[in-house]
Image 1 (cartoon, protein in one colour):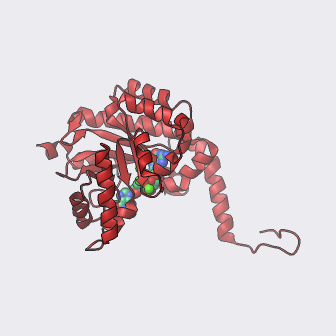
Image 2 (cartoon, helix red, strand yellow):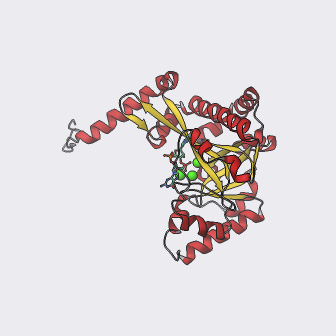
Image 3 (tube, rainbow, N blue to C red):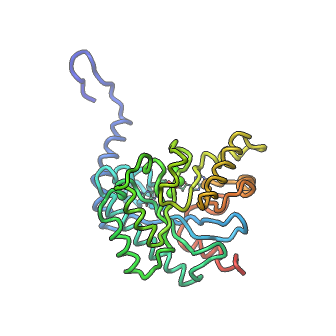
Amino acid sequence: AKSAGGNRYELADPEADARVITRHGLTTALPAALERGEFFIEYQPLVHLGDGSVRGAEALVRWLHPQHGVLGPDRFIPLAEHTGLIVPLGRWVLEQSVRQARAWRERYGETTAAGPLRINVNLSPCQLTHPGLVQDTVDILERTGVAPDALCLEVTESALIGADDDLLKPLRRLAEMGVDIALDDFGTGYSNLANLRRLPVSVLKLDRSFTQSMQQFPADPVDLKIVEGIVALAHSLDLAVTVEGVETGAQAEQLRILGCDTAQGWYYARPGPPERLHELALVDATA
Ligand code: C2E
Ligand code: CA
Ligand code: CA
Ligand code: CA
């Protein structure tokens, strides 16, 4: 590293330099990566806690980088958001995921024991403020011939904190069409609970930190009370509760007793190729 002038100077930090180069390199490689088809999607099943049937899956994007191998979304989504590539990338993820949902629906039927077979797709805050969101979504559903109830869009709680009507309008339009909206990472954003009534959401996705606190037995009594309270509030507002990061049967059981509706996590399945859902035999759960 160079000296910064005056009596201040920076020590050479080769690792930091490598990180900067990688960040920069990844950022400039993103647009071509989308064109070359280096992104792919893994699917993680969503399981109904009541009877263990598969309800659908969440789409999680990965980048098969020619030099660095498979990169997780935490490595490149922030860069894509920064450069605006998230809009075309997000549109690509949405279209691929909806096509996958159609394939599952053709194979297993449109409904499961616990409701419509659904694909969950993450939306970044930049996509929310992009004016094409509603039209792009409508186009994709029409092009693929998939009903809106096959789609659940996940928006983080933090993206909606203090959201004004302009930000909520596209989500409202999508919700009116029958698309489900889930509030992701719920419980980490300190949002006003009363505010929930204003949001066009139908699902709360409880953050993994709550699931982690169910690891000990007996679980922390305060955490139990908090989850119990969130579930009661959610149900009184007609919202379903999904829990993520379920890694053990004990956690699943605890969360089921607390009244959570749907679960997701390594205990059931890691994110994987779409065939994994076939292995979990959607139809058998209803038989
Ligand atoms: P998220 O939406 O909260 O997704 C859940 C993350 O938890 C995923 O990480 C998933 O692989 C991981 N996970 C699932 N089950 C377990 C478990 O039992 N234990 C633990 N420890 N982790 C579990 P992943 O795939 O690395 O994704 C990270 C984040 O990247 C996601 O967090 C989401 O915010 C973002 N993301 C992923 N795909 C997309 C996308 O297509 N668009 C946008 N905008 N964001 C995406
Ligand atoms: Ca999510
Ligand atoms: Ca989440
Ligand atoms: Ca998360």
